[in-house]
Length: 225
Image (cartoon, rainbow, N blue to C red):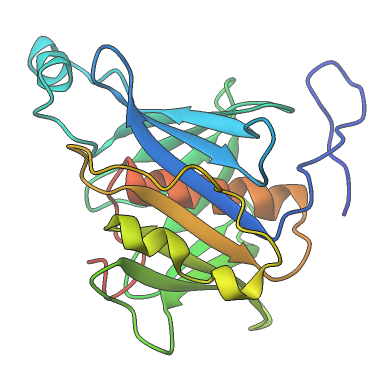
């Protein structure tokens, strides 16, 4: 796993190695959606927050719980490293940027979604899981590398039972005591079973896709369209 620079010029330790990456949706006091990510039973590795929305009507919609996710510039702040802004847009690619506006990657969404760096290099792609893209519990997505290697199995959780999907591939269920409760939310979150170490860029792009799917409610596969 390579390291990338932080704004202060010091080496970036990079994201921790993970076998499971779970992001759980909740709400702030102003009703904006939040998404807390963990890669184990310890402290969170980061949190995403729904865009404050543009215009008084949109802000009121969030405040009164009418605007449950959707387009906007949602922000993921890792425990280590720089924030990523996830611009979820209608009928246009999702754009991932740094705080200074530097583009990290762009995701062209469709039945098969593809993330590319500004120079056009492919980072990851998403598609329906070959074993079925939709169940009552979750939308199931395969995340693959440019060479076709399966990198992760990503579940977009629809019901509490969905959190148990894929637990047979890991040694420890990282959410002991956190079964989750039904909430007035569009979805419950995401859970990714990561099958190999990720580069810092792959990690950022994978997390951003989880934010885009669960808070932005953008489709990344045929079943989520």
